Amino acid sequence: MKPEQFETIVDSISNKLDDIARKVVETTHNEFINNFDSQSFDGKRWPEVERNESSKGWKAKYSKYSGNPPLVETGNLKEALRNSIKGTTWRDMRIELDNDYAEFVNAGTKNIPARTFIGMTNTLEDKLKKIIEEEITNMFN
Image 1 (tube, rainbow, N blue to C red):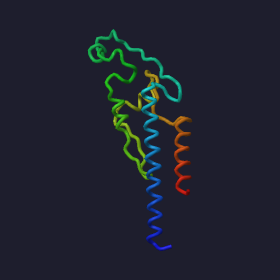
Image 2 (image 1 turned 90 degrees about the horizontal axis):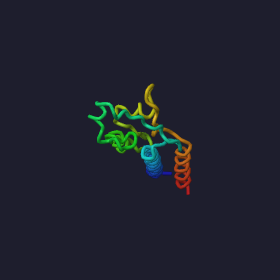
Image 3 (image 1 turned 120 degrees about the horizontal axis):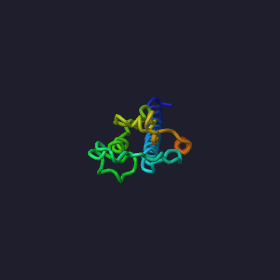
Image 4 (image 1 turned 90 degrees about the vertical axis):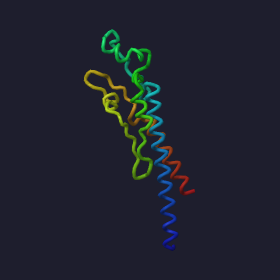
């Protein structure tokens, strides 16, 4: 095999790995958005929100959002989620939320129950395995 042939093969494999990475990141990202939109994680609904709408501070800041579902009061968290894909190559697969409170919402705090929307589930793992298996099979056919 000539060096240029080897280089072509390596480039082809590298490009295919980047395609797999992009599909993995996009599938994961879509799963997180679906969790957020359905207000559930791994098939379990989020806990109900107890709003203190009689509080003067709450009324001043959030009364226009009182009919919205949890975590949709300002839209900031969902917007951060929409724009969270930061890397889609085999060497750099990343989803990062540029939001100060996403971690607290996802994991919960002492006073606020978790409303998990980011994380691995069996369903997501199965989807990712299927993508990887199909793409690798196609590489060699």
